[in-house]
Image (cartoon, rainbow, N blue to C red; front, side, top):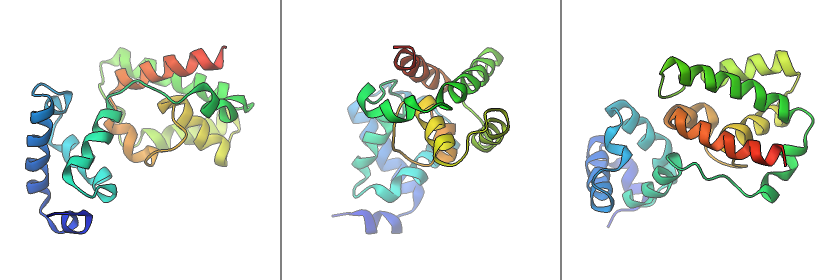
Length: 171
């Protein structure tokens, strides 16, 4: 029997092997298997603290590759802020540029670089800045720290989510 405390004591390599078997049982050609070893390690490190069992990592794995976003009602408050459309626009330009360059993921420094740029260009700060970025990029109100989760989400998925958010912004 293994719970969250036992997981913390296990070697990461063992957890990765166990998780790969679980993913393989669920879907043998899952996008997970196309990711680098570094990506897999980063994913496990980010989501393991909230897991009680290795199988619990399946939920965030599905969320990483999903373009689904929260409901319009859930996103209503941050979408109504004066700064959110400008934040969205700045991020959309950057994501489109990265997609054109052929990159598959944002860099580890993307979040800090973009948040600094947006602070200067848009004048947003604090909750308006960070929630505006979260909603624009992920279509979610809550989640892991953006600086850690964004490099794990494929750019194509971020773009799909942004397209979904854009429908709410222009509705």
